[in-house]
Length: 82
Image 1 (spheres, rainbow, N blue to C red):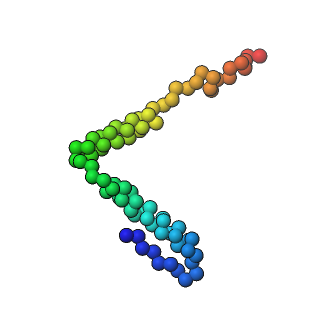
Image 2: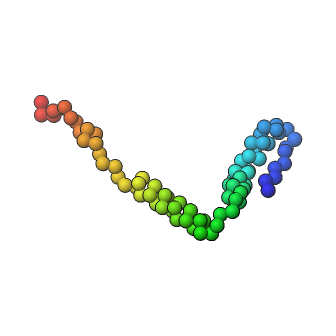
Image 3: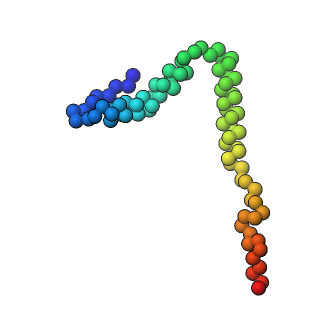
């Protein structure tokens, strides 16, 4: 449970902002969504493997070098021998 104490000269808006930040850091909402409904163990394992596949696909997609376009890096149309 997230608790904050409001200081003497603190506005309600800043106290609310601190409270929201604390709720996010303690992952209270994330935990609440996770426990909102029952997921059978078999389905939980499937979801875990699907998420792992997505992570790996994303990791390898960004790590691969992109092919350079033929127009990039060359001085096309510029003759240096003139």
